[in-house]
Amino acid sequence: MAVKIKAVQRVNPQDVSAPQKFYAKAVGDGKTDLKRLAKMISMQCTVNRADCLAVLAALEDNIIMELQEGRIIQIGDLGTFQLGVRSTGSATSDEVSSGSVRKARLNFRPGEELKKMMNNLSYRKNDAA
Image 1 (spheres, rainbow, N blue to C red):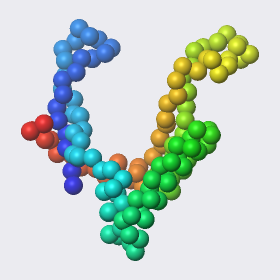
Image 2: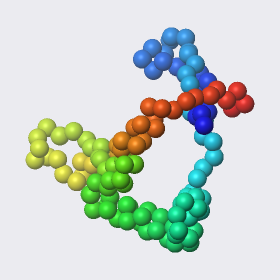
Image 3: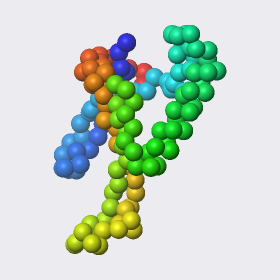
C-alpha cells in the first residue's frame, strides 16, 4: 500500500522573498485506536479482543508512568521513547536548576523494523486532497 501525499505551497523560511515552492506532504488515511489494534491482534493470535485491549491499556499506562520516572522505554524492535527537556541557558552549571526547564518533549527513536519499513515506503499523489 502506498502512502498518500499531496502538494502544499510553502515559503522558504531562509528567504521569505523567494518564490514559494510546492512540497510533498503525507496525507493521513484514517486513525487506528486501541480498540482496533486489540481487534487486529486478537485475529492474529489466541488471545481474545477484551484481553488484548486490557493489555494495550496497561501498556499505555505503564509507558506514561515509566517516562514520568525518567526511564527510557524500548518497545521491542518498534523503537525507543525518552523524555527530553528544553531549558533556558545559564552562564554556569551551578545556575542550572529545575526552574531552568521551560518544557518537556518526547523523543522517539525508531527501531530496526521501523527503519526498514521507512526505507521501503512507496508514495502515491492523492489529487483529491
